[in-house]
Length: 263
Image (cartoon, rainbow, N blue to C red; front, side, top):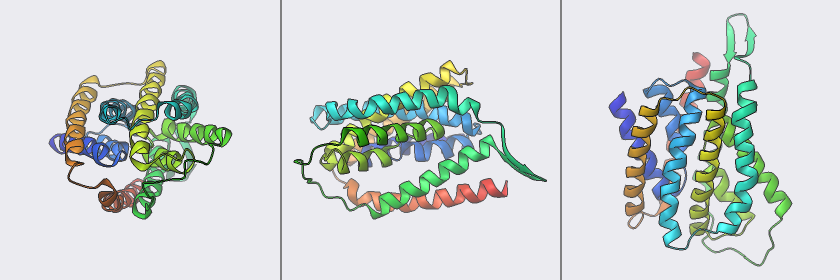
């Protein structure tokens, strides 16, 4: 199981390097089902792992001038604020038992996994149906208020389930900020790194138990993976790979929902 988990860690980095998202979609199930980490703790681990990996990945796009820093920071400020306070205040406030009726009990851990699986399902549909073009109409002005609200909502979701949110951030940057697809991917990695690492500080403030051995080994392997993914991106089109990855994520989301309900 441990060997499979570490192989998966490399694949998480490869995913981020190729398509700019999908890291946390793989990270949380691997941490929970292969390494036995509790779901709430796994969301914290995922923030650190995906944050470090995205930070490294964004440097590749920075060198190619494919990161829009202004748009990224405008998005990141409300997003990381929402992530931080969700991890520090909202998540610890959720009761350990959400619902109980006879022998049927929905615990906090199960609730987190089901919400995460539903987010996975949404991400999978987005990746399968993704047909955005490389060019956009940059003449349309950005609606800053709506952009701010969208960023805050994504921040809350990121904080709740520990997902980097690339599959939500990239469409927002393309459709609202009118960024070309490649620049949206680079800017998304930049935003994910900020959101995830600041959100992780909320877990430190909330005294969440952290196994630093798992975090360091897993993050190192994921960083190796993103180097591999960035190299492979020269030969493999991320736009062609994304639908296939989407079907894989769709299957995983259905598996998680069934497993958690049966459990």
